Image 1 (spheres, one colour):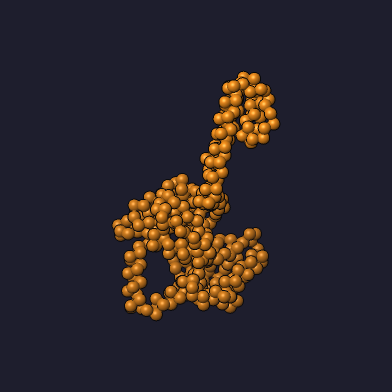
Image 2 (cartoon, rainbow, N blue to C red; image 1 turned 120 degrees about the horizontal axis):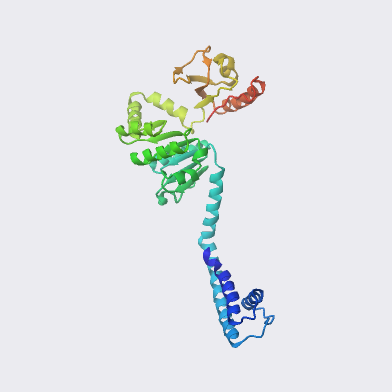
Amino acid sequence: MYKLLVPVALVLVGTVGYQIVDPRYSPLDALYMTVITLATIGYGEVHPLTDGGKVFTIFLILGGVFVFFYAFTELIRTVVSGELQQFLGKRRMERNLAALANHFIICGYGRMGRQVCLELSRQGMHYVVIDKQAHLLEKFDLYHGLALVGDASSDELLRRAGIERARALIAVMTSDAENLYTTMSGRLLNKDLFIVARVEEPNAEEKLKRAGANRVVSPYQIGGLRLAHAVLRPTVVEFIELATRTEHFELQIEEARIHADSALAKSQLKDGRLRHDLKVMVVAVKKLSGQMLFNPESDVLIEAAIRWWCWDRATSWCNWRSWRAGRRKRSNQPGARATGQR
């Protein structure tokens, strides 16, 4: 792009050159002479040219022809080669990054990172994926995702990815040291960020938690347990897959957070009439203390909690959203809300 500034430099050289070869030329006269010479208009000289002025004009004309031809070919090459599209695409990405909020940041685009991105794309969640290996992100084209090349532990890159506004960070790089350092950087930049980190060595799990990870996941441990359960309890594994994978439309398990100012807070589970009105079955309630109540009774008191639901995606989620809006209108507390997170 800077090569296209060569014609501007030539105009400056011509303006200064006319003033040097002939002191009678003012800056405006020199600029005028340069423009009409390079444009080959030929309106006539402001002052009769001296021999030095004629020689300078000859070289300025020849230089102008070559420079403008060079600039034109560079412009064509830039458009054809995609540099202009790349430049505009970078500007567009920066605008998209600045507009992100409540999004996810995935650090590492290896085999596990790709699976995380695929699931987030299927769920319609916005996210930013970071990897230092540029070739891994060259053909990245997943919906709702933006790709950044660089060190995920860099504070500057994490800020560029909008970590102050992010909902969660997922560190899935192959090295425990990289995941540890990235987790620490993310926690220092956003104390409220939910962080999930991958761990390779068992003795690194405690370190990651101390560095700020809310959850630590061992792919080998989870994979081994899944394989064992597939043999010991194949029907249970089939049901879990049916309820947790998005491609199974007929049944889903979802999680919803009940806030302190929700219409459901401080009421009994039966008062919400979720099973009767929405065909939603509450399978567990997690209290603020961390206690998990499975298959809760109808008289369980709902405080600020996280709940897991099984529901029919075709109707129940839409019904829940409509019901939630109605409950907010009828609530006596200003701004009260009950929200579900997908």
